[in-house]
Image (cartoon, rainbow, N blue to C red; front, side, top):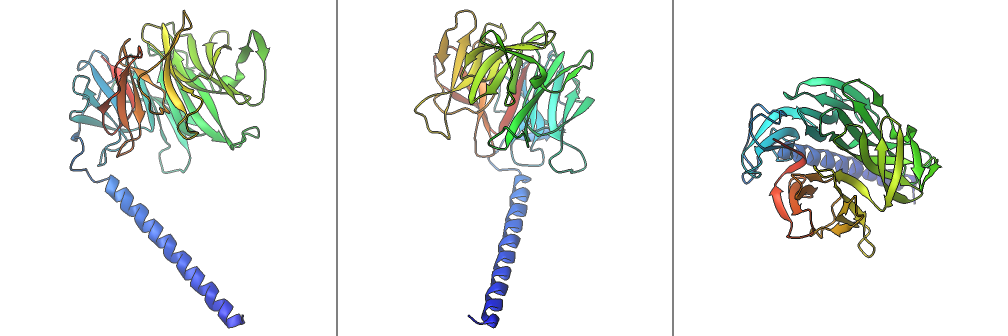
Amino acid sequence: MSLQRRILILATAVVLLAAVAVTALVRASDTADEKNRTQADGPRVTRGAVSLDPAHGGPRIVFRNMAWGPHRDELATVRAAAPDGDRTASGVACLRFHAAAGTGICLQPEKGGVPDRYRAVVLDARLQEVSAHAVTGIPTRARVSPGGRLAAWTVFVGGDSYAGTDFSTRTAVLDLRTGRLEASLEDFTVLKDGKPYRSADVNFWGVTFTADERTFYATLGTAGRTHLVRGDLAARTVTTLRENVECPSLSPDGTRVVFKKRVPGLPAEAPWRLHVLDLASGTETPLAEERSVDDQVVWTDDRTVVYSLPGDFGADLHSVPADGSGAPARLTASALAPAFLG
C-alpha cells in the first residue's frame, strides 16, 4: 500500500471519528434538552414551599422528583393520600435524600460544577442548609434517625487496592447535636461470630437507625459475603447477626428489618428479592414483590414498605405489604429516595 493511500485512509478515519464525536455530543445535548421539557403525560409540578416538619401540612411524601421538566432532581412533595397527584417542587436538588423529625440529609454535587465532587448537606425543616460535609465518592445511600439526631450516608469510592472491581464504599455517621463525625465505619471494631475480626476489604453501607439514637443496623461486606450487623455508636463496635443481607431498613416499631438478599438461581444481573426478618424470632419472610429490587427500602408504617424500580423517566416508587401477603403496586411515578412525614 502506497504512502499516499495510507495517508488518505488515516485522514478518512479521523474525519469519521470526529463525525461520531460530534453526533454523540449533539445527541447528549438533545437528551439533556428533552429532560428539561415537561412531558405531556407526566405529573403536574409547580414551584412552592416544601417543609420537613412532620406537623406541617399533614401526612405527605418528600422525594427526589424524577419527572422531566424544569424541576427534575429537585426535592418535591405530594400528599400521602394522593401519591400520584400534583407535586410541589422546592428548588433544592439532591441525588440521594432522606428525612425524619424535621431534619433532612441531601447528597448533591458540589456547587460550581466541579466534576465528581459531592457533599452531604444537612437541611432544617425549611430546607435551609445547616451544615455541609465533603464526601469522597458517588452518593448511593442516605438515612436520618427517627429522632432527627443522626445522619448517615454512603458513597462509592475508587482506588482501594483490595477492591477487585476498582470501587468500594465509605459510610459516615454524623451526630447533629454534638457535631461529631464518624468519617468511616471501617474504623469501628468488628465482632464476627463473637470474635474480633479484621480485614482490609471491610466495607459498610445501608445504615438504618433505632429510636434510641445510638444503635444502628447496616450491611458489612467482606471476603465476598455480606452480613447484617448491629452497631453501637458509643462503643464504636459492630456485631454480625446474619449472612446474605444488604441495605436493611428498620420498621417503625423496631421489631423487624426489611432487606434485599441474593437468591440462588436468579440471573446475575437481577439477583435480589426483598425479605423481612423478625429480629426476636429470626423468622425470615419473602415479600410478594418478585422483581429484583436494588434499593434501601423505606417503611410507610409498620405494615407497608416502599422501594424504587426503574421507570420511564428514571425511577418509580412501588409498595408491598411487609408480611408477605398481597401484591406490589406502583405508588408514585418518576420519583426516588422518599421520606414519609406526618
